[in-house]
Amino acid sequence: MKINNIFDITGTKFPAGRLTRVMVGPGAPIEAEGFVMGYVTIFPQGSVPLHLHHQEEVYVILRGNGKIHVNDETADIKAGDYIYIDSDSTHLLENTSNEDMIMLFCYSPKGIVEHWQEELEGK
Image (tube, rainbow, N blue to C red; front, side, top):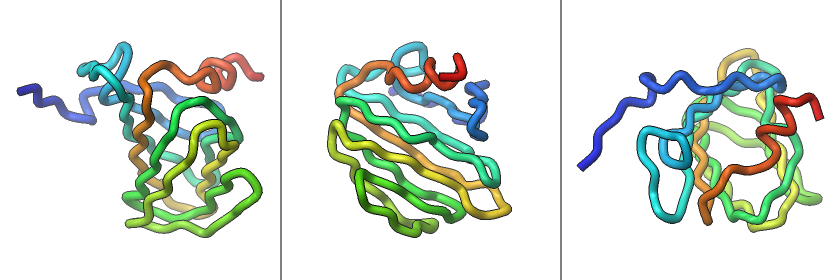
């Protein structure tokens, strides 16, 4: 058994306005065989910018509200909603409120998605 605490993870602040703490995955406190999971605080008016990757993914909105864009669809989202995102789908999550949005993500298969490094490099 492995027990850790999300808030012990420093995480990475991204220019688009969020703090991502990878809980399970490469370089995280726990590494699973087949998936990556993280806890994200999206600051007011922040986002997970438009991107795509080969992994299928689920976002779980724990607090806050905003908009999700997947391919050509857009929907309002709120706490309690969860969104399944097919592999190779473009997607963007934005916090349209004045409060932090908290979300969990999980994607498979495991790996490090390219858009994180691209965003940090200003691409």
